[in-house]
Amino acid sequence: MANETATLVRLRDTGLTLAHEEEDVRGMTVVDRNGDEIGHVEDLFIDETQRRLRFLEIGSGGFLGIGKEKRLIPVDAITRVDEQVHIDQERSHVAASPGYDPELTPMPEPPTIEEIYGHYGYIPFWGPGYMYPIFPSRRPKR
Image (cartoon, rainbow, N blue to C red; front, side):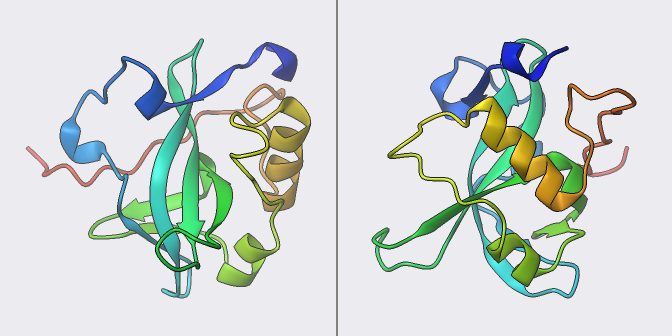
């Protein structure tokens, strides 16, 4: 699949829902591999064609929504979900990632998506050899 054919949309802008409500991480705190807080999951970006989660939209900083910075973190970074979403990156690396301004670009464009994957060191989801990560669930084991 070429990255030009991928259409990413916010989950909230679709009629789609998650298969299991307890897997919804929106509103949860995201922490880095050292346990330092990065921000909160504001929304989820999905690949509209394949209906797979691709990015967490993280908001951090600001006051009452003013001055808040947004970052996109690939789902590949998630290592664990409990009361928080844990990722395999450090806060400073996330802070240095390509910024994302939904006011200027409501949906991330292919060059930005590719730049984000490169920054985090992951194969883009359209790249050869890409394997969709197993999304850690906080669902109770049966």
